Length: 252
Ligand SMILES: NC(=O)c1ccc[n+]([C@@H]2O[C@H](COP(=O)([O-])OP(=O)(O)OC[C@H]3O[C@@H](n4cnc5c(N)ncnc54)[C@H](OP(=O)(O)O)[C@@H]3O)[C@@H](O)[C@H]2O)c1
Image (cartoon, rainbow, N blue to C red; front, side, top):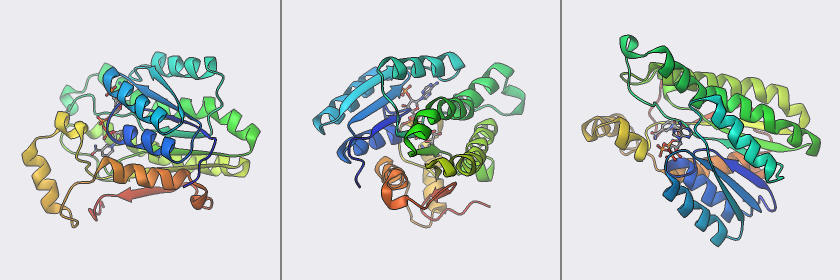
């Protein structure tokens, strides 16, 4: 996996899938790995240290994407660092809270949509011109199985935001492919990480394992492996795909 000399930006890289991706990008030869985090500064520090141990330069930026101010803050920091991003991993995301129809107020709806979908659009929009000038670039978005099955209890708006990500992935791929930019996504099933420590119970996760043909949950590293493949030269002819990675849990 040769990403020698590239500059990568990974959102949501203080833990979970994003942290695993950031570490792997550094090991794959990236010269700069920029990571964004929101609340978990210690996690971001640890990831930065691993990036530097792998021989890349690291920059960590705190930004809350539940409003557009966070997206603009991240873009300002990238611009201030004078870095042109070659590889963009739009990974930051959350349910924020489980809320069924009656409990989902307008403020939370907007925050979920901004964090999971609107941020993807505006980060891609801001960073694409530099990729277009170079004639190459790779974007990988992180969707979810929820985009296809409507999500679990209280996760409908999250699911809708991820469906937007899958649709943007296709549309942007068609628009940007002629300019040398590949846009793809991964769609994880259930990954055994902090996300579900917060939003699911162990009983629920045991139930998911029972329904999963592979007989277990996914890992952060498995998600990162697929993301790395999608941004590598080995995936040069893959455009606009949302790759399901879920242990055989086929969503309708
Ligand atoms: N875990 C799963 O089973 C699963 C399944 C399908 C899709 N996904 C998607 O995978 C992506 C990565 O999630 P994960 O599983 O690695 O979960 P995670 O371990 O909870 O990590 C989520 C990351 O997103 C960041 N984040 C959360 N809220 C944010 C906000 N308001 N503004 C900016 N950043 C924020 C977090 O930053 P801080 O920790 O610093 O606050 C963290 O770095 C997400 O898009 C998620 O929707 C996860």
